[in-house]
Image (tube, rainbow, N blue to C red; front, side):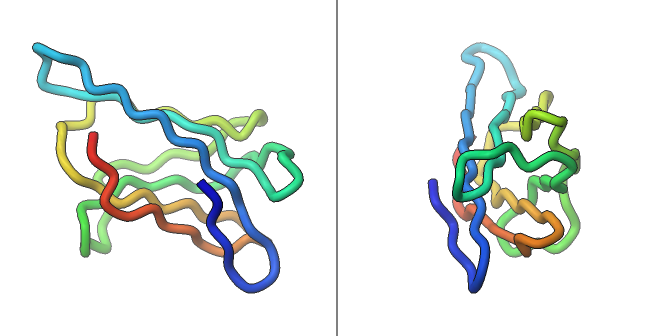
Length: 95
């Protein structure tokens, strides 16, 4: 998925795994810049649609990867923020 803002852009690959017969899900992905380089230390937040307070927050590791476990299934927005890239939001993510 390619998100563009004025200036720089970030590419966010998101993988949603819904675990059947269980009540929680996992959300993981990788944040990269337009050249494909990892974006470490980006802040990644899971939010309910329209909410300002995150359900969960983490930072990407040195490979640009992030992982959320124990999320209740539902529809969420995913926000990624990094210095020099601004904030990118993926809306309506079903997990």
